[in-house]
Image 1 (cartoon, rainbow, N blue to C red):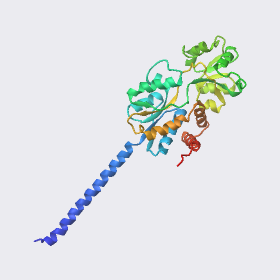
Image 2: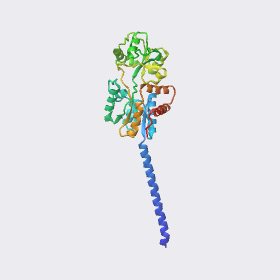
Image 3: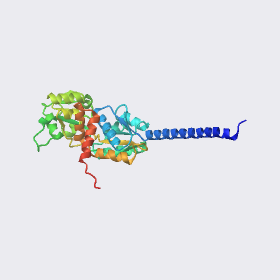
Length: 318
């Protein structure tokens, strides 16, 4: 027969083992919950397929990381359409978009505005009901542009815009290289010619994609070529975009977009992104793209830009 003195120690051991097991399980559950919560707070950034979109995604990734927020970079499968689709499906929390592209490709609307502010206001308002919030825009406008060699520009102080280039192209001695769709469309070359009075009847032209057009202008085979104002390849070849004084080309203003209610939709994140956005303009974006076109990694380019931006910011007074 067992006595109280022999039973009690064994019972106490069983109780203690049960208590310890409960504590271990509880700690495990709490640790798992914390891990899941931390993962849920990670900001997922969508990256597009072009070199410029890779630079922008790298800028966002490094900016959010430096803000102390967990972050993940994810291939969103293409440009504006793919990234918008991913954001609306809850697969990404943040991406950079272009106002003109969002208006025409994402929203299937026509006649994108040429005025940068109007362009941003329209897409920002239209996306409110979709749960996408456009943050403050940059001054970088990736609009279409005709580019020429820097050496072919008129002397400093002389007109250098599309009004000047229209006269050059109307002479019948200057060849234009442009996308075949732009040459054929009524709202392409014909619209530009109508606004600037370009005599296209005897104007030499060559159908060429952006890369070929840039190469042809750099080689002197074409006087002007169609590219974007932020083209890194054009910048690397020392080509310059000619100003569109009459605002014929639609605005493609670059701005960050966050999914409302997502981990990116926090003031800590949005404020950091808007500081970066405020530092971007068209020449700066072209310069960053040119670094990538010359072989630099987008992440390296982004870190260098943010380091320089941090050094330039005034030190807060204590």
